[in-house]
Image (tube, rainbow, N blue to C red):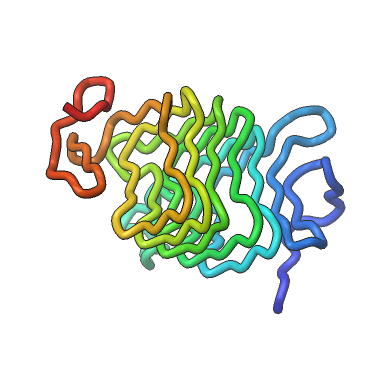
Length: 196
């Protein structure tokens, strides 16, 4: 296993840190200020033996790079957390007042669970906000009461071995102004994002 040091001198609870037990923590510092990450967290194919915890964090996706730019190679723009084929042995949790501006891509991942707590928000209006396509969740998927998701939540091919709880979550602004439910036909979304 190869590790690349991207920051030195961080100690829990001073900010984002990888723990010896294999956990990745994005948490507030000693003053209570949550981490702000502008750009993309790239965890594609990562193996996290412990938990992945983001608490009171702000994740902001980068803007698309102009085609006429000198840096024209393909880069996924609008993605705040890029984790396809990621594996997390412990809990995967967003809690506190996590704010994500951009997409969370966990397609084809294997997670022990996924919990997005009350007070969190995912904003990608007109795009995919949360992609769990073809993922395997070994326990529950939970979106807490009043979690706001602006954008599409993709569950195509997702295998959830526990409960899917969306009670009280507010889902709005999907990609094509349609809602899809597992095993159902296309339905038109109402202004609040609820299926009609």
